[in-house]
Length: 170
Image (cartoon, rainbow, N blue to C red):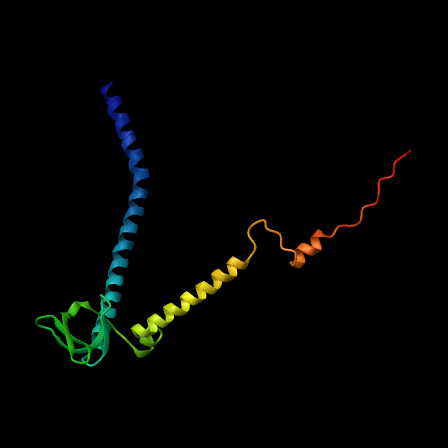
């Protein structure tokens, strides 16, 4: 009796291993695919970083990770400090790794942001005037359910065919 119990355990283990082996192969192939993807993705990222580092020379316009724009004055590789001139006479020291990208003049010119406080105020006043004009037009519009006699659609739909009197059999 004990041999039959062990025999059934062996049959169960061989059945599960034959079905499980194909699943193990699938998992192994997926794991190898993920590792290969990570290797090639890392190479691509290193190449992008090397190209960006080659572009970041003193005198170029750059942007930091936190959105600070300026002219790169110097980069100290030993202390990892970069000096950026944000406006004439104003020099900011930042960590070298915060340098994000080199900014081209076309990228700066595409911005629709106002360049000065006066321009921002003028834009805000113009938008406020447009909103007031739109509100005035809306206030002159008829309320929901209100009839307007000079509306051509209402006139066309309000006309009815003349009624003929009912004939009675008297």
